[in-house]
Amino acid sequence: MRIILDSNIFVADFWLRGTSFRVLLDALPKTGHRLLVPKVVIEEVVAKYKQRLEETVVTLEKAATLLPGRTLALSADEVSVEIAKFREHLETSIKRIGMIVDYPDVGLEAVAARAVAKRRPFQKDDQGFRDVVIWETVLALCVDDEEPLVFVSNDAHAFANQGALHPQLQSDLAALPAPAAPLQYYTDLTTFLDDHIVPALDLLAGTRHEEFLDWLGTYANEHSFDMPIEYGEIYFDSDIDNWQFSMMENVDNVEIAEIRTLPSGEIWIRLDADASCEFDVYFYPPVAYSLPDEYHASTSGEGTTSKSMHFSAKVTLTSDWSAITSMEITEMAEHGEAE
Image (cartoon, rainbow, N blue to C red):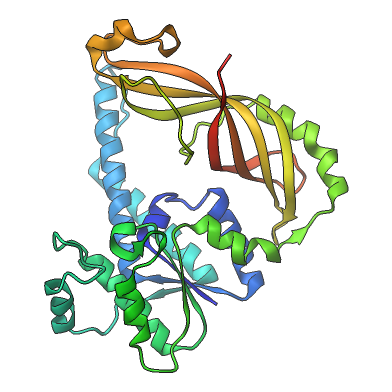
């Protein structure tokens, strides 16, 4: 099987250190599958990293004004060096388990016809040239080899319709000359891994589960996990305009559902647990006085609040179970009123 990843999958984890990429990079060779990354994806991911780095530099420069004599920012040359390091890391990681695919041989006339017709991946505002290049790469790979393909992208505007590949793109596949490789579409890397990679990992027997339950619960309680996560509906006061996850603490009631080993020896765990989670909240400053005390509201329009949550996670640990190497929250929902 050949796996193609869109830019947004890489941008969510630039340095490929999260749980999903740890599993992909470690286990993919064992399955016999290959990673294929269009060259345009590499260029966009590097451009996004450059943008993110430059934004960070601006933030550091502002912070330096509060610390006279301290140099926090990077020079233009240093930024260029960091971008080159990132590109090398990205390309080396990909080539270790697959290859970078060159631009497809597609005529400008065909691209223009798709744009005029507003045919996906083009959108109504004529955006989508990069996505067209990616899709034409996918189509070329379908014709090039009969080995099945998987395409992973969370860009619903370009490729999806209600979680499935858009009908216009399905018709593109149907029009390919036979024999053409079958294509599966996924909106996230985690689901693909659950379907095709994780089941190939060695499963540890249930007796090992109980052996480490207490240890894992204790470790989680002693650490705060400040990370981006996806979660279900969480309810806030109607005056709260926006909010974002800040940190997790007091993890309790850990239930391990599955333990497997990666080829490198790292441990992969799927678990459910409860936790107290802190959220930063934002609102129109004048309503600060009317918000409940639990929001710790300030007249600047910002505050914090805690909620008791139930979450599902995937965790990787060192082979000797001495340290967590990554943690990915896959589901989160409000469990009850926070203490």
